[in-house]
Image (cartoon, rainbow, N blue to C red; front, side, top):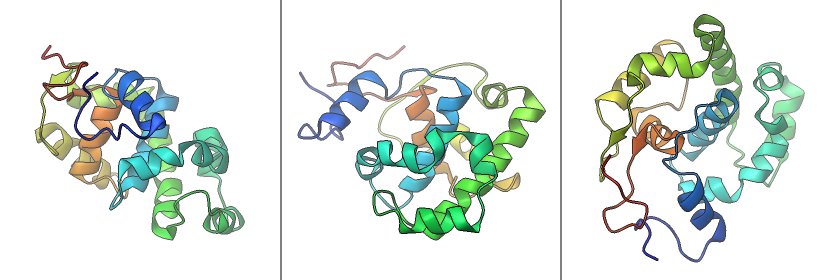
Amino acid sequence: MIRCKWCNLKNEKYIEYHDKEWCKPNFDDKYLFEMLILESFQAGLSWECVLNKREDFRKAFDNFDVDKICSYNDEKIQELLKNKKIIRNKLKINAAINNSKIFKKIQNEYGTFYNYLKIFTNDVIIYEIDKTTNQLSDDLSKDLQKRGMKFVGSTIIYSYLQAIGVIYSHDEECFMYKNN
């Protein structure tokens, strides 16, 4: 079975993510939050690195409970910095806490984070391959940054939109490919 060229066929987690999750629409706010946090940890690293640590991130970050993460204090930050099972980057850990507070504000403002996303996506799936940014990721990134989020540049947001199924990007050779 042919998969997208980025999928490491020697990594079962990667294959499962590619086949069952990537580019599949999932607009549940809990999932949207988890993926936003994980994508922000990817900055400068490979998605495979983050994916391999996903379960450890879930444990370390209270199963991505936005309310709990909003209340993290210095003690919790120190605990995370000592956790060798996750990516121990202080800037990214602080950004995760900061971004969770902004995520919560957006939820309060729009009812759900997905309602906020729909302002940008018009509830439409984009089919495109071989890109790392587009106008949508540029616009969403700028707005999130204006609201104070960190590690949400256009490339990270593009990856995020692929992960949650707003952008469908399976390679033409991939068994999952479709063009709408």
